[in-house]
View 1 (cartoon, rainbow, N blue to C red):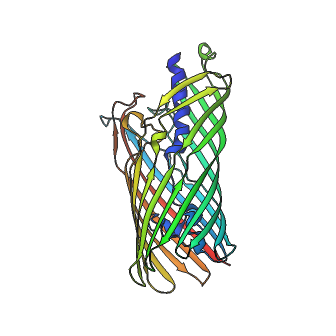
View 2: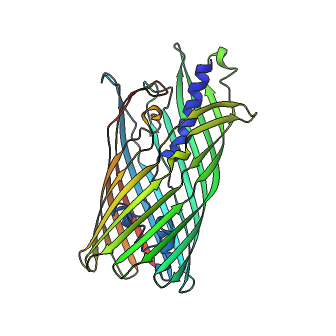
View 3: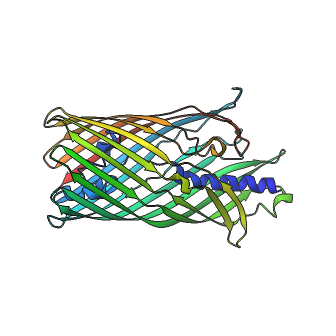
Length: 400
């Protein structure tokens, strides 16, 4: 019976881990087109997300509305190639909105809403990994009031509070040989954190910027619902309240942008995520019983970003980007809830400067995950994962 408790718990824990493990940074169409290498040159209201210290470069009242459509595809194969399962396909929509207001020549305030962690995996019921995961669905919503100060004519800082809301829904099945039991776990929670950013204009062409976002601990309250459980297992697989917590990792970035001439700009960025704080996860019933403590053993990882923009004329600017992302999960903790791998991202976009105050942006990004061959997994579920994703985004930036 302990085995089945562990199976259920593993599902719950890995689903919650999904919120920490799948990071999304495409929250502005004009800057996702440059591979998100914009910590040193954010010049619209989405600076609330990319670098709070850059808000002082935005005169007047600014509004940025963005939507990104994410279409991932993933499949699993057994190590001998005899079995293959494709994930169900879903189109995920990620909205983001930012507003900034210049109060004085030295002070600007802003607020943003975005989702830095999320998406879903959806495997068909009854597949070979069904006891680990069928569907995993997670959302996080950041609400981030911000204030920025121009300390000198060429150096600015920004300070931000982050209130984070999150919810999760997961399902799986347990194989009892002669019947399958259905499991649904759901919960929601919230937490607080903060951010800091700076920008230093070395000269008219060279800009250096940095950003730090703190950890946020989300405390989840939820429900476990079981259906079709054989009677002998009802004393342990019963409906009830559950609690868990996840610490979203701290991140920081530093980068530079250089204006080569009136047409060409290039930007580079180093983005770091401290996944090492995510070394285990515990789930607890409301009566205080610790159901399990699952090791994660994740590593700190880096992301390297390159962005280029080319101004065609006064109306149109073309943008290009490249990102290399490291994944944090070692083979022993990779799970079908998040079949992660190192990845290469390629992006292209176009800004249409419709008027002096209005810019309409679009971008396309292809995310190519390395094939991930997993052996000696702690769950006993090995295999090969292959994942890719297509992103398409649109943005509207207006200055009043």
